[in-house]
Image (cartoon, helix red, strand yellow):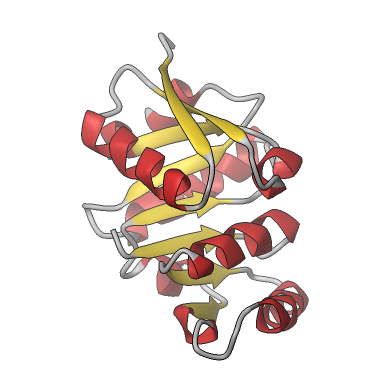
Length: 173
């Protein structure tokens, strides 16, 4: 995997984009709010050396973010309507190989995955923004019954390269 799209350039999206760029991934950071993208661009520019900064593309549409992504992580509020809207758009616009990971503490990954055409490529990240901003976070990935081992491995390996200690929990529903 070489390319990751992060949907949402708020604090969580910025933090993940920065860590992913430092780990050598090509990052597409998307937000529909120009102010969020501007703030993200400035904070990431200050944190990265000039050679690493080109690894981050700041885009204003989901289509531009997911076009070449191997993994998409949405950083939208943990609310059903927000998650469903983003999953629908990503599912429709991303290449068939793309895996989708969504941070959620409140929603069922099995239910969210079943709303896509790629339920075997969806995982939940049982973490909040503080957990994902931590330098030494244990990280629980939630795989639905239909989630493929390849998808779980891809997401686990991504977070391992970011310095997390991920474990995969296969949930029943």
